[in-house]
Image (tube, rainbow, N blue to C red):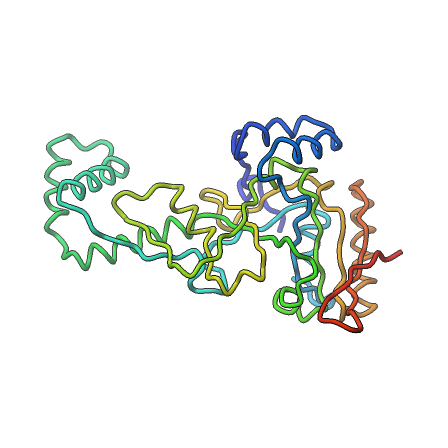
Length: 303
């Protein structure tokens, strides 16, 4: 089934993190590269990579590759879909004096019941102040922040196409593929791919005064043991389980895993032929080669 327009998410025009990253979109490729390295600090990563399992005998696996190779779109997952139960989570604090609590309840009521009179709203606040125990309100606060976080759409990349662990964990034991994206060919999208912060400190968020930016920081924080992923993430507001388009020219290469078989390359070439019939830019094929004398991979171009 083809998605309808409402199944896609489009970033606002001013989404980029600075005026420079907005202006860069109007320049040609060479000018973009110069501006990126001279004026943007820190500069955008030139390349970002995305690992994927690939089984030509499974329709859903082929469809995942078609999404990127032919449809030029990313799936925006919800944090509740992630494999790490601590990912995008934090310690929700429910501590505030009665005045701050009343103000918070007033904001919630105004948002969800804007037609209430001032007297009705005050009565409802009084009821909320006494209707639940602090423990019950703490649980409600955790549920509310979790719902807000799970509504965010997230798609992930890595800086490293040679990671032995990433190939093992996300590309089906080195039999899958890794997509190469050149960020400056679509700055509107890839300038929003922010680096993940790896830490041993569990994030904290206070229900009564947290901001959207603090919620974003939850999306960009992971336990230190995951730092081998060198991850960047695009986080989109209220976009969980939607598609995100990217410029077809941003996809510049596909790397075959070190253990991929000939039938995998054959199917990949078939998909690239379909891509060509759609008038999309050509893509270079590479292969990850197991080094003979050290724990590392070498990436070589495939003719």
